[in-house]
Image (cartoon, rainbow, N blue to C red):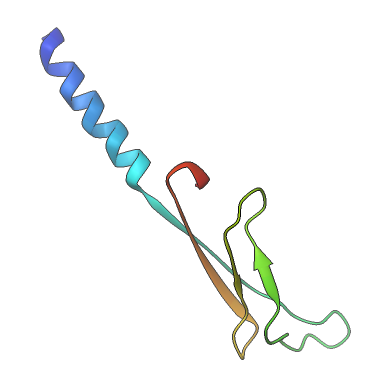
Length: 67
């Protein structure tokens, strides 16, 4: 029993480490809620970032130690 638990635990941990999260949102002006095109958005505490599209929307994929 003890020998079969370790491989299952290792597979579970590897699955968790390999997961990817997607952070998405929209950047709008405060005055009139219009989208801001080309705004730079960073994931806090990392070098991951992106810019907003023509609708002010962005998406950052975070995986591994950054998730």
